[in-house]
Length: 183
Image (cartoon, rainbow, N blue to C red):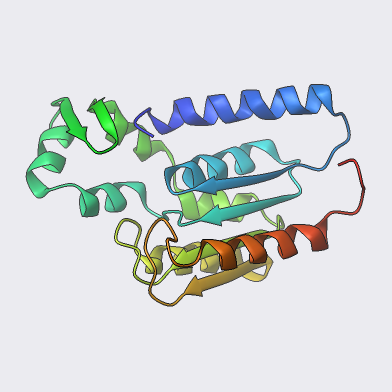
């Protein structure tokens, strides 16, 4: 999650290529959560051959998201070219300035429109403290009729209270779209 988004997209594209090599003809769906959802949006717009996309607590504007979750000083320092070192409950990491500047080449709403008519399931919680629920609504608006948006009342970025319900919705949504047994 601390790699530049372009690197995450490269990795995702390599995974898709390998799955296609091993299972030719299978219908592929991407599920991305949070920043991984943004990587999935970018990949879907570049790929053109996916069967669907699932966005779980996914941002619509990457800079806005990180400006919101970082302190004003941290964001300013990173945006000014300084590398930030973090040591928290998730471990140690360095965020380099290109983490932010790499975002600038990706207009997520435009990429969602480019990926259409790809069916997209969007799952979000209304009290998400990392990616505000309004970003899911903006994603759905960019997608249009191919979007199926579910916002769970309350809940957090990790879907602590709603993981079972979200999993059931996801399973039902995929089940309706899968037609072949092995794929």
